[in-house]
Length: 119
Image 1 (cartoon, rainbow, N blue to C red):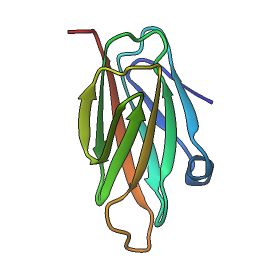
Image 2 (spheres, one colour):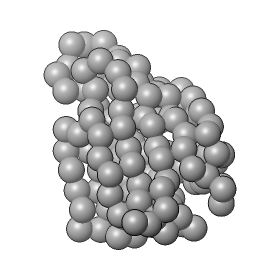
Image 3 (cartoon, rainbow, N blue to C red):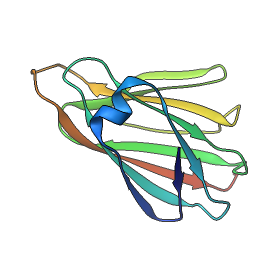
Image 4 (cartoon, helix red, strand yellow):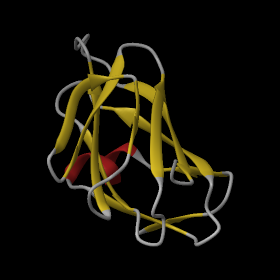
């Protein structure tokens, strides 16, 4: 399990993140942070964001070459995204990071996460 702190950086080894969804929890005072990882040549790197205690908007943005994310939370879903702002319908937000077009090599990425107040 990963616990994200306010304005934090989280680095995960590709092998640990690529097999199943890696749980990510946030401190009560969390406002923004970054997950650094690697999009595999095939498949996706999965994170399960636990937004318990954060009853506001959530913004996700990915940085890197040839990478995008898909997300799912309740009835909301999106694919091939580079950024999104949403009001999650539940506390669990699944984010899958993958390559847009595989070139046979892993691609590093930074997934920026921001928890914002409602409104």
